[in-house]
Length: 273
Ligand code: ATP
Image (cartoon, rainbow, N blue to C red; front, side):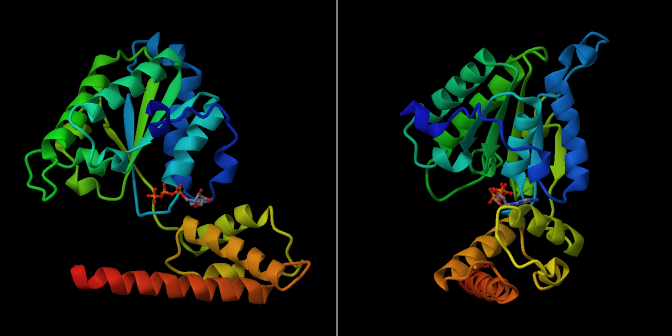
C-alpha cells in the first residue's frame, strides 16, 4: 500500500544533539533548518531557497540521521522513501509514488522529503543495466525531476537525498534548482568516534572508569552505525552475563565481533571487485 512506502514522522525527536561529529556537514545543513523555519527572511529580499541537497558518504555514517535531525530541529514533518523500494516495480507505479509523495509533502509544508539510496533511481540514464527494468527506473527519475522543477521556491519543501556513489548519478539531478548542493558525510576520525561513543553510551549503564578514548582508538574504520552496534552488543553481552554494568571487556568483545563481521563482509565482496 501507499502508506508503506513513505511514512510521515511528525515525531520530531531526532535533533543535532543526536548527531556526533560531522561538524562541517552539520554547519552546512543548519542553513536548511533556517530556510524551513524562516523562509520569508530569504524570499522577501529576493532569494531563492534551494530545493534539494545531496548527502554523500559511505554507509552508516549518519546521512539518514542528519536528515531526520533537520526535520527535528525545524519541527517539520519528515517524509521518506528509499530508492531501493523502486527496484522491480510495475510500470507506472514508481512515478505515481513519487507524485503522491510530493503531493503529501506539499500539503503539509514546510516539510522535508528524504530519499535514501537515490542512486537506485538516479543512475545516469541510458546506461545499460542487466535487470531490464531501465524504463521504469527512468520514468521514476523523470517524475522526480518534474516534481522538483514543478514546485516553486515558496513551496518550502526541501528534498534531501543520500548516496554513497555520487559519481554514478545522472548529472540532470545536480542541475541548478535540483540537488545543487552536496554535503559530504565522511567516516569519523578518532575524535569523532569518541563523540559518537558518547552519544550511544548515554543510555547504557556502564562502569564509571570506562576509557572512551581507548575505545575510539580501537575502532579505526568504524562508521557511526558500527559504533552504535558495538555499544548495543556490549550491553547485551553484559546482561547475558548478569552484570549490573557494562565494562571494558564487554566493549572489547563487541569490537572484536564487529571487526570479524566487517572482515567477513570484505572477503565476500572483494572477489567480485
Ligand atoms: P546508509 O547509507 O547505510 O543508509 P546512513 O549514512 O544513512 O547509512 P544512518 O542510517 O544515519 O546512516 O546511521 C545508522 C545509525 O548509526 C544511526 O541511527 C545512529 O544510531 C548511528 N550513527 C551513524 N552516524 C552517527 C553519528 N554521526 N552520530 C551518532 N550516531 C550515528
